[in-house]
Image 1 (cartoon, rainbow, N blue to C red):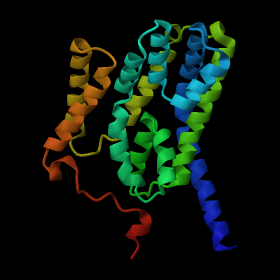
Image 2 (image 1 turned 180 degrees about the vertical axis):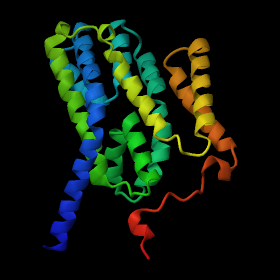
Image 3 (image 1 turned 30 degrees about the horizontal axis):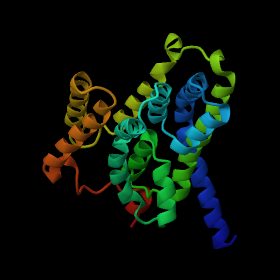
Image 4 (image 1 turned 30 degrees about the vertical axis):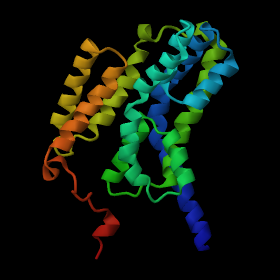
Length: 251
């Protein structure tokens, strides 16, 4: 077997490892992508328009905000500003994930940033925390599984429209929050995880009360980042080497 064949097999294996990792996200986000499709059609979108919005924006909260504002004939600049507010946390995600993608070609980095979501950010950070190199094949496997399912199920939801019941009556609306809570818990062994999470949660609740949605998400994240930056490097975990892999432990 040639080196090229071995390398190709390794990339394929990493791709499918990423796909398997994202299966819970696909299951949890599926009802919401269908719900978006149904809401989009209810607000005057065609099935193809709903599909292309999911393909181009690929952001559930942003799409929901956009659909809501489109339906009320709000000024375009306000729609853009509102979507920017919802997605501002991705600026923080990109800054954090960027250091793991620095060895990628610019074109691959551009694709990765477009496909960056909340779970994808957590996957990349968790992969790096385990001492693994964040590879393009693995990243695309995890990201594309969610992207493809999100766009296809949007079209399904748009096609069936009113046949989708209210998710709140079935408790489906709790799937994603529970999953995101699990992602947060995955980082609990990091230094000062509890204070950062507590400050972020408190700031987010206060912002929701006094500023309103959707700014509470980004303001809560900024509060957590500010605390982490203010802490001494040796206490915040900065500069601490990741755990060695089994290969690195060998003499």
